[in-house]
Image 1: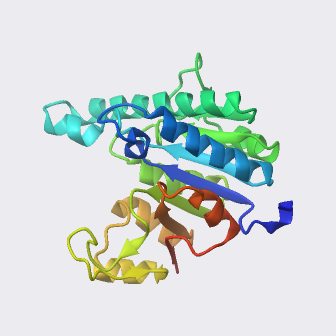
Image 2: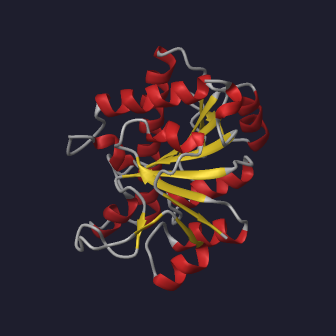
Length: 240
């Protein structure tokens, strides 16, 4: 397939930590990690510039830690470290597949990752390196959804692709109501009017205010990342 066949030249892919669980109850399923890396390798070979924000929910979630009695700020920092573990695991698999990759962290841990600096991140993308962005925004009380929107805007991504366990945005919970309708496309305002839970309010408002399209699709259907990049009808697109 020719380089010009893809629809999006630069993307920000949001991977939830839970997506890396696969069949496990905790940690990282190497089979899932390997499949994700294969798909990233394929779209990278087409010339697509890829930045990835990874969550840490498969290891630790700050909100859960707070509910169990931890100080919220400290719990969130622990969650950020969990995202770095996931990023390093994905970096290792990508490198073994011959894909040039850099991990950048919003928390300064220079022994294992570069500190996140926007100008350097842009250069990595321009040089064809897959960019793994760890530790969220580097601040407590902000989710990795917010980090995804922020980094997508900073790095001038054309779209934020939110890879999840569901195949799009529905008018009601499809797990509870078999008649739930999936939207192929929906506006930011309609999502708000219908009170649909796509991502946290801070992240969603930031994307809406800066007209950043969001695509929500099922990560577990093999080949969906590539289909999304090629502009096929995958999941749901949210735009103004």
